[in-house]
Length: 405
Image (cartoon, rainbow, N blue to C red):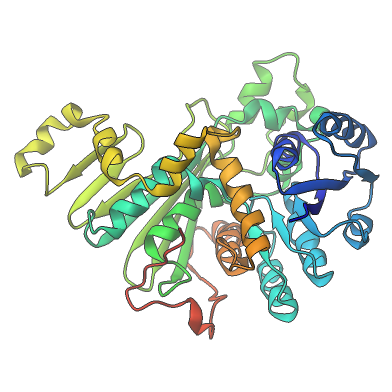
């Protein structure tokens, strides 16, 4: 089978890494690349040349999408361009995969879904964390009933980004303008994607309401003042984004999901995944499992003895996808999950299969951002969660579980 002619939009820091994975994919031929900055385009053209690619350069993404030399599109650009580029690709009848990040309005989420319904063009969010080794093992444990009925899930994007945000103007990074002007749960999908799989959100279960709360913004000002090489004009107390944002979502089945955004204070990286079920519990912070099957009630006093015990459960439950991946040799990108998410999109397009993470899954995750912004502005007041999948019966299952993988 001939390689698919691929166009890539967005060649910043994330775009560079993901583009190289596309360049290494045996079924992809990069025929076009686009960024608003010429130097990024020139650099990428040079990097992919040794792998046999000779892409044409565009500075306007609409021209790339319209090109007859492009059959499939990857969108790695800034957050605000994800929906416009994805919608334009769908209307051009070109399958599109786009990077993660929250939407700016609920209307954007609706546009994404409507473009797919009207055109039937495949579109997928590249939420790599849905493909993580730990996350996929937890799906298998949950499907086996290990956790019983899930009552609460927790997750977070806990990542010290002070350097990246404060140097955003120098490095031309979109986070700078977002943190200056918006206060919201701006990056919900890394934690929420796997949680949605575990709860079957959008596939028989749904979110009902959202409440979001924000702390003050102090971390970036302090960081800039403590680093004389940073632009001191931005230690001005005018960062809109709060240091900690906590979001609570409720589901139709009576569960609670708690999300945390923590990116402007000193801390180690963590996605903080926790599962609280009627039969068992899991914590990603110390990779520990606690269950009725393996522990007595009195064992809660000895919790530290179980830290790191997740490995024995992985030996039993790790799914075939990851066992095969380990046998074949893990590819690059965040422990290998970047390759898996790209490959799943490419293979779904080639085989005519449904998108593993489709526009409705994407809209649900992206909607958290504008809803959280609205709730924070109103002092944490609950807001209703839109049902983007209303009337789409084929997505529902009797037990509320969604077999994504």
